[in-house]
Length: 192
Ligand SMILES: NC(=O)c1ccc[n+]([C@@H]2O[C@H](COP(=O)([O-])OP(=O)(O)OC[C@H]3O[C@@H](n4cnc5c(N)ncnc54)[C@H](OP(=O)(O)O)[C@@H]3O)[C@@H](O)[C@H]2O)c1
Image (cartoon, rainbow, N blue to C red; front, side, top):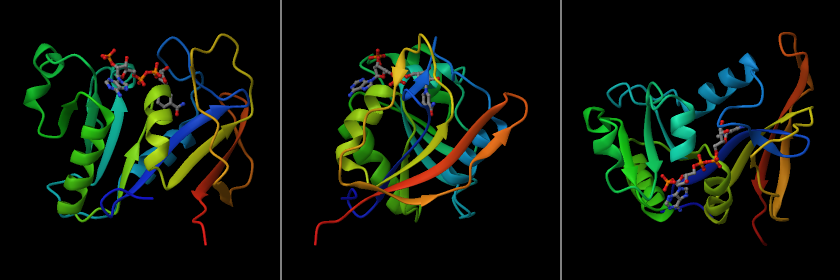
């Protein structure tokens, strides 16, 4: 699959009923999962002016992070609003780029990744962006959170059948939230 030689990966934490969000926030706080997200989306390449990863997200996900770019990563934000960058003063950030459709975001991100010697661009949500980006996606990193979320309003799509679980971590427990969770990597099976 991949896009212009760059791997496209998605990362999400999902409940048993595939919920990813409620009231434009995560439905839980699991510190180890946030660390996992940070670790995977930030490569160990150190020669890109401190920028070590590229993420693509929808406008609401960006707003759920208080409209602040993620440290050490280049952020592509997708919105139909042509004035979004100007209205929210995003022009001042070198590492934030606004695009108005997914294809433009992925094309720009893949081209930048090439220049930064990064092999992966990360799709980090939300619901529609995950769903629309699946057709480009090689790998999905899911945190399976062992809970059922009532009244969720954003959900992770079902993975197409050609994705297989390639690596499954042990079930772990988060004391603060009292939730069990498990990291699972899915890879797209290439046809023979
Ligand atoms: N659990 C997790 O791993 C995880 C990860 C990410 C997010 N979340 C949660 O998910 C929720 C947010 O997700 P969401 O699904 O509601 O929203 P979202 O996908 O983050 O943002 C949706 C917005 O993105 C823009 N957009 C998306 N696709 C587009 C396209 N192809 N062309 C143009 N614009 C496009 C539109 O913005 P405009 O309306 O401005 O045009 C759309 O309204 C929050 O609760 C957040 O905490 C959870």
